[in-house]
Image 1 (cartoon, rainbow, N blue to C red):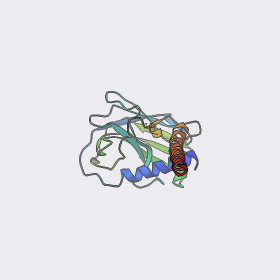
Image 2 (cartoon, helix red, strand yellow; image 1 turned 60 degrees about the horizontal axis):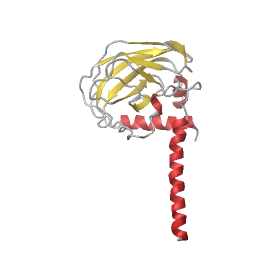
Image 3 (cartoon, rainbow, N blue to C red; image 1 turned 120 degrees about the horizontal axis):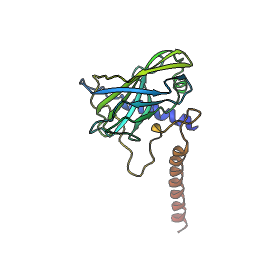
Image 4 (cartoon, rainbow, N blue to C red; image 1 turned 90 degrees about the vertical axis):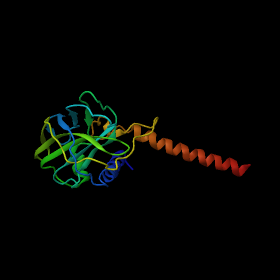
Length: 214
């Protein structure tokens, strides 16, 4: 399976986990997003900067996009991660793929407004403690203009079955890393994970041989 296919499968699986349980009503403080680049094309590597930090006790964040052709519950564009998160000041959130790639995944054409939300969450309970919002408006399938950086609130709060944080020493989540020139992720982390699995299998095979020979 190609690295980009692995990324797409991971994003799809994360979306299912995030939305498995509806969130009960409640008010969540929020802020806005500033996008870089703010006026560009569908193949641009997009970075969103929050207007503030994530409050306690949130220990990670993820990002969703809703709009034409995307799943009703939203398209996961950043899987849960703590990479780069700040509590005291704005921080940057990197889309895992380009908008063109996400459109291709959903077999759709980009058009109109796409609402972007970055959620600050508890990685164990999945509780949302804050959100930052903005939007990307496509005047054509290949060009967008961003808007955002305004204070907002939401009625979504509570358990959402977000995946737990990675254990200490585990490879960092690739979703929050800057995307590459082709809109994909650095494959080093993916290769490292695959290599670890292969090494474990090889170790088991050799141990079995020794047991048989003895």
